[in-house]
Length: 170
Length: 436
Ligand SMILES: Cc1cc2nc3c(=O)[nH]c(=O)nc-3n(C[C@H](O)[C@H](O)[C@H](O)COP(=O)(O)O)c2cc1C
Ligand code: SF4
Ligand code: FES
Image (cartoon, rainbow over all chains, first blue to last red; front, top):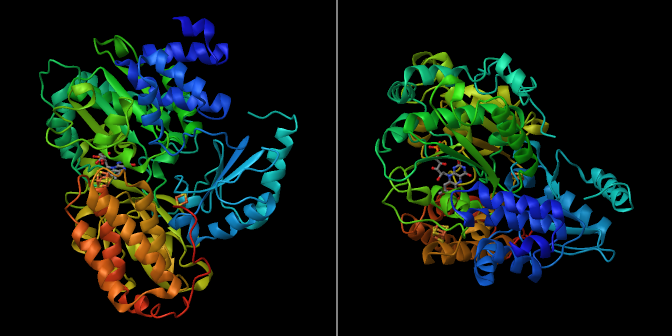
């Protein structure tokens, strides 16, 4: 299809999308994975990304937006390069998640849903991430960090800042 | 990285291969993997379903429905393709057991899916993980690719005429998608809102075809049931509750973690011996026995409580997803109730009014209450709202929000009263919760 040559995504991702569409009994099933992978590559679901996904799946853009808006991991605006998600749900709360969250707020200088000025970090308080027995737990993009205390926070931030400064990254 | 724990009382069936490198297909085979599939191929679908029935294995996703019986509801003949759908959405707070299965034993999930497929006559299985589990999806994807490369998935499996394919994917963040019909909607590329029942998925499911939906732990247990033999597996548990269960022990215990214990294991012993007791030598205040949706139990209610579906049900709560959350005497129950209801308010899909409005009102009332502005009437109001949600919502999420709230208000009324009329909370540090 034309999207292949005109894709806004990298050739690797475009090829992955072509394979995804073939994988399911019904093409539309590829929608959620496609949105996630698109977001991973460009940071959020931009208008252009939505338009291309809609075209690839023969859906309307409204349809794509309608589905995307249901899921909490999908976003229409950029987050930081590293999105820090602190679980404060019950198991984590009992073991000090709020203290960890507060420390992130202090160190990063932003609050819930905030993005640092340099765009490197964003911070979010989130619901249970499935790591309750290793609480308190956080996720930075797709990495889990668990059994945390507030004192772990500066080290975690420094590690990702290092990655952002050219040593690897997403 | 999740830490593995162990205790001498554990009976390691599902966790047998954890930490042994079984993510490598050769290691998995060396440890007896894919032999259960071979056995089922030799014995046939009917034998397989009967074994599952005889094992007394009940679903590990929450409701505890007998697995063999569920499989037997799928019609033998169907004009539409049949499917197996593995529910790895795992989003009930307090629950993190499937996490470890995907991490340590992905082939057990694949083998279980194949056995379910063979039993019901499906050629395709879906393994759906929650969106946050991307690193686990990668492990699953590698396992699936290895199984294809070894000729275990695909056509003519193990020299038979059985054909089976596995498709893996993740969600994108939504608790409601764990509900089975919402899960199917999500897999079809739609918003994860539930479908009306009947028809049940066993008859009209994914893409309109008959579909068996099982929790990931249930599916990972299947090969072990077949290998051990149903009778031996059933003998591990209690009456009508076969085998073991992965219990997630979290909160104020000394040694939190996921432990595999026989069905019917005493809850008090689980907390004090397996979990090492209450952290810092404090006293036990309450236990949430099966994930955040299950009503709270008091210390005196767990003395002789065996952890199986029937006994916990009789005690007025539920075994649910097996997530045991332990609460010490320094915890504010009003805050705990508020944090619980905040979750359900956030995750309500908004489809039906009693749930959408009910969770919102409960959250608002509890927030005000916790901040010290509640009145005696508010306590009854909270109870009234929760009671009126029960059984009146489109899907069980409404009940999942109302049940724990009712439990907190009924069992800790005194503590609610202690927060009345501008009195500061005797425990809490965090009056405002940012998640909205
Ligand atoms: C709101 C809601 C969320 C649920 N979340 C999950 C889940 O995350 N994982 C799961 O296996 N079952 C979940 N369930 C239960 C499923 O609907 C279904 O009963 C289960 O996957 C069946 O598998 P089983 O028979 O092996 O337990 C949820 C149910 C409801 C009502
Ligand atoms: S009870 Fe109603 S609003 Fe709540 S999640 Fe289910 S369908 Fe949606
Ligand atoms: S409660 Fe924090 S990971 Fe589950």
